[in-house]
Length: 436
Image (cartoon, rainbow, N blue to C red):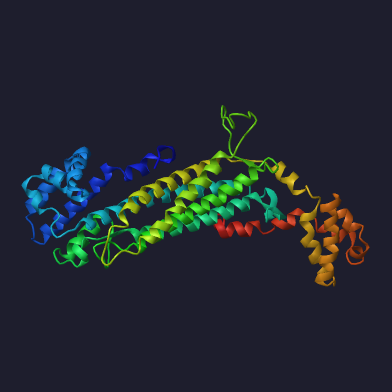
């Protein structure tokens, strides 16, 4: 992943230094398990920890060995033997490369999940704060991008909160599913290593033992994990797209914070563009794109092949690093978002009362008019607003058929904005819980 869209803590999880440290810990814990079973001497396991635990692995040296061996795990084990000495012969006994690679990958994904969960917590906190701030800020709701009926900007943010809360729950589940360990040897039969060693390593690494590994951990787990990241990215895009639409010049109900000295265009000095949310839209597309190869990785030949390997070397770091950056950027957008209630009010009244058409329709039906006739009466007055720029209330008050059924007071009552926000507290209590 390019540095522009990267944050250091997540990048560090995927660094060669971190990877080789995890590889060592897996091997060393396995040696402890073997020592407890009497397979290797306790002194050898202790030496491995003492020397390897203090070592700074030479990445250039490992790369040098790999250029000859054409095998990354063997290159690491060869370098480790240079550090440990004669007791290195007890390392990797009964194990295969996938035991190291798969267990390490799942450790990395688990660590990445913890960062992403923290990111979601911060985003949820920002959304909750801004939602309550604008709980009563009335704005127009839109369907098909056309004015529908009034809502509040706080409800828009409450919807986003509820969505990202679901995302968080999904990620918790995905983390649990991906946090497994395999130390089962060739084709996963434990023929040359006791299952108790796997259980020991799993416990030490904060994982669960994979029930059945066929030399590799089943990739349906990873498919579910990366699909979950893709769903979270889709939710990022949904909110980013809403902000982009609301920042359009013709709308301008909200706006990304524009810092002093910031420039919007190399050609047009007046521009203030929604660059952050546009960027989030693009990053979301990238994270989603990693879900498909993860699903295609599920189908491996027989007990294992390595068709998944090259894919995961890319999508593991790229998906988690990108989503980490995107969630953090979105949190900043929400925290600093500029909200313009006056523009919301002006936009809502741009079509002179049309947004109250449903209330008039329902009032006519409740007064005894058939739904078909009521719809006809309301629509013919509404079209005059669209086509001739008329005022909806005035047209209704001047329509004899409408006035035969509804009094002036009854018609005017249907234009009360507060009617549309009477259940905001109920929705907020569903999303955020009842206030203390």
